[in-house]
Length: 426
Image (cartoon, rainbow, N blue to C red):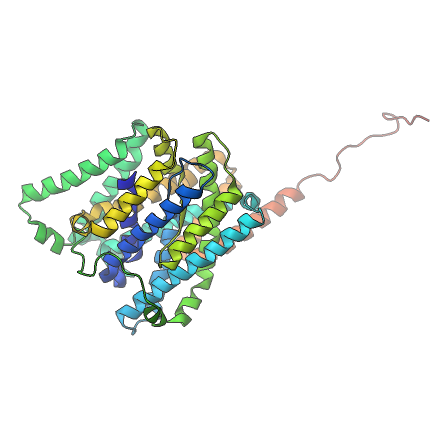
């Protein structure tokens, strides 16, 4: 569990801090490892379900990546440090705002409000985040903020995304056939071993592999993570931060939906009810503390809890161990991370994308009516061609129109009778 959490944090850091922000990747990885520690400790300690396992909210990662790219594009002539600080301040401010939203929903016992959002729209949101995550993963491969298609077919890019895609496919397909708890870490270990066997067979030194971008690379002497000082925060361009409000508003909605959907999944896995209003308050605390340190937030993940349930965990120890492993990697794991094959860091986001697409594009075909499924496809297409914020608006509008059309077809007359059938009695 700890290994998978660390790998996810490193992978998501690679997605967010890509393109022009790539030089800050070690810091970004440290930021997400710090977030993982806070999320695991807080939610494990205070959740209504003792055996819960919490991770970074994967559905928010592609939106953070989108925000980071927008900030860089709005600051073309700014120093690199100011761009980085503006991104970090935006992430931190967002986490604090989400904390307030979660607390308000929990305090006023509105944890079930997500049920009023049309389910096809929810599916479209999550499939749309899969599109964003796919885009961000390939942009991290190219090292460019707006890469051309040709950039993906250069040799160095091919050596990353092709093995990454194969790795993601194996991680997606094999667990569907083999349900053993060791299947995920085994695939991960085998992938790393095969990579280094390949280096040995081709006679490629580690230094050369790192120079070619096949490894994560060395970590600066400053370490993986440093708290931002108040003077550093003041260097951020707050006008650019505020311009991200519309995109972040979409993230607030997606984060709330994802928390409650994952909560429903945990209930099915644990065969017990969760106190959703309490879970919202606990998640609020996790997002607040993580945001104070510049990090992202998270909540219970149905996938990780399914694995923990297979391991037979019944108490809070598992979550605390996960936090301890992330903390150890944050404090002293830089030399290990520098040897991490980059294709795995690309493969993990692609795996999440496959899972989103499988549930909301493939399986949804058999669950929804054709009109509802069309809404999901519409949201995905608008996300890919126009933008995520516009896709949310289009999806909600389409759902409202479909609702009105369907209800207009219902007859307003419940029953018709005549005096010959129903006689009055006095």
